Length: 165
Image (cartoon, rainbow, N blue to C red; front, side, top):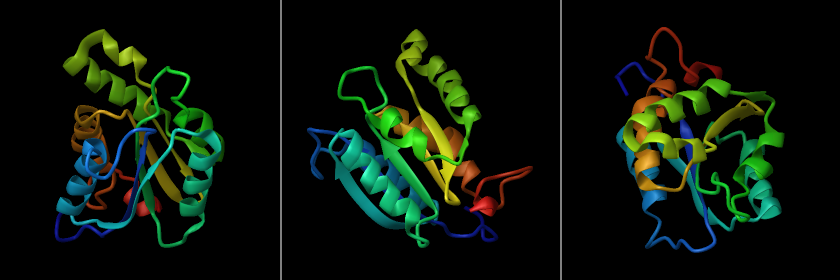
């Protein structure tokens, strides 16, 4: 973040039935990076991969005028317990289709065709941006470093999402 960039208030949610604060490497990656970029962490939680519990948590944060962005990690794969897409997409006012497309393009350079198993996605709900990333620390590094950091930097040109929140 540059001197002219504005600080955003962000939340991080890890979607997992097994992670704890001690074992949540992906959530830690996102927290460390957003703080290093000059943003403020206003909420951090680990939520079970249950459609209704997850939807309730994200809905509460979307309704909170203090939260400008939510970063989710986990629950984007293809197992029966990967419910992030099912829980969250219907909350969006606008889908950001390009996020998932670009994430998979960048991920392909790192993990090859395994990227087709990523259902990373993003959208905007109630003027809150929501990024949903896979649950691996590497995916969180890729998503933050190569896409999210610039899009949440109000000084990034020609455009960014920070000015729309």
